[in-house]
Image 1 (cartoon, chains in turn cyan, red, brown, yellow):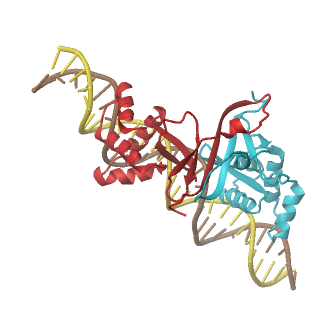
Image 2 (tube, chains in turn blue, brown, red, cyan):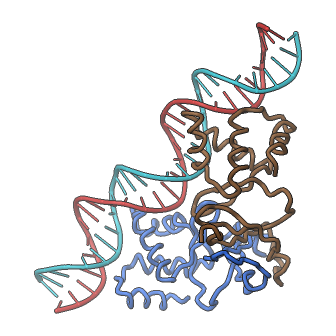
Image 3 (cartoon, helix red, strand yellow):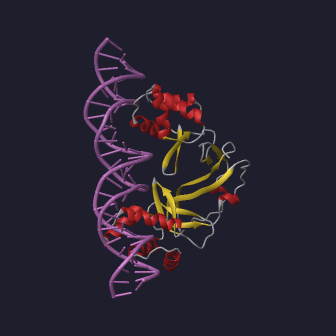
Length: 136
Length: 136
DNA sequence: TTTACAAATCGTAATCGTTACGATATACTC
DNA sequence: GAGTATATCGTAACGATTACGATTTGTAAA
């Protein structure tokens, strides 16, 4: 997802433009990988001394609601990244060192022969963890 | 895994037998699904008034180290279940209502055609969430 | 069966990520 | 420029987990 797209979504949905919001999106746009709330707080604290946790988490949740960010839970901590708008449904390899990701095109729910008669399937999680070529 | 096997592992590894440890294993043996530390604490508190968090978490981690329990993270909370000793490698469907599981025999790492040249793969997670037939 | 000691537990406080909220400041509309 | 809903700040509270000194207990050797 591009920065402009994300800002347009905010505007279209009637949310206010603030410099902090733009900076949050710029941050994720530069990162290309999963980042935590405290990663973001540390980054923004350089520019905005005394920025509140409330601001960080409120915007992360908002952006997640608006499908601007994707969220996953990793080592007991929520991680966020810019939504990969171009894939309808996909999974990720995640580098445990730098957080960068590689999209996995295939989905096990389609490829595997699963028998869940009588079950109600809500969702699923498939992630591969390791080191990307740069970190290896 | 059977209760006796688990107790034997403890004995063989030189850990002491305590009634609390047996009760923890009995608890998981009866549950057949993922349970949290506080599920266990609530259960044991009936019999042992004032049981310590230290006891709960220390034993959960010990049993996990000894492969007596399996662990997964679900909704930001660690969940534990008796290890399914009979499957060499497997994944689970997990009922979001009662925590009971259904083993998934196939593994996407084998079935999917994945290209990770240059990457170092450490591990992976594949879980399906929903409602089991009883809860549906 | 007593003794000795390492291991296990208790009681409680600290930590960490996250959430919550009243007070204040700010973006946007008219 | 004024009014208002929204965003932010500052800070406290929360829930899960970890930590630790003091005490108790299981086990094995005397």
